[in-house]
Length: 296
Image (tube, rainbow, N blue to C red; front, side, top):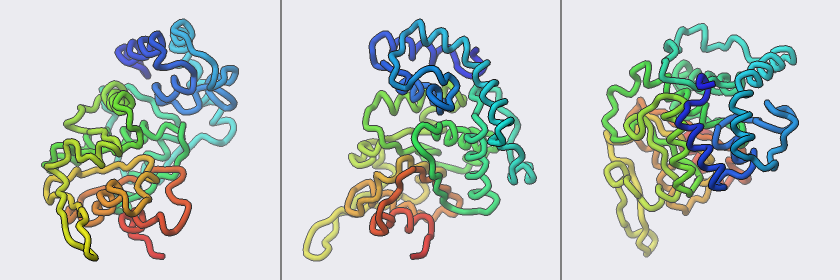
């Protein structure tokens, strides 16, 4: 069973269920970072996302999960939805599997991971957008890419205290911590040395960012305003902006900081934006236009 879930994560989830921090299968799916765990088209279609989860039910699910994943993959192959050879495979880019990684990605997650790597490193783009719905296991996609880059030694010339920064919408420290545990438990990544997860709230407050982001008060149009810039040479080499629609308000602090990513002079930096609802109006797209080099 521990080929996909390590015992320390299982133990934490058992505690969260027994203390009612996790009450239903939708919350369990988020904790496990498994897309479509239950419901129609999921690994366990007879269970509903809103069904109550118990410790006994979780224990049974843990035992059945490997077989369910295997059946699901076979079903995808038969239905034509299984993603086989990828264009990236022709370039021999991927490193060998690291035994510290216990996570096994679903076909769509592996395809998304390869798509992003192809665009960033084969097409040599600076920034990309992952247009992905909630529940598709984006966190696994992010950390798979980080795992590959660590194994290739891509971060070795990065002098930032946080080589990879993941910015997430969640303001709850428990969920931020949970995301970091996924990096450690599933992908064998070191937190915060190899990857740091930060909420938008923490980004706005400047918590722990004074060495990387400089704030300056300037006069503009007769008023004092705050301007932000990333300190040259101390920026993360990979910045992942999850739920990036949170940066679409031009006057918001987090939007100003994220827009300034485009001004970082380090040509080796890579940025991944992710959201299913990244903008509803053209006026909300400045943060993406600035960083993706789009023309309107």
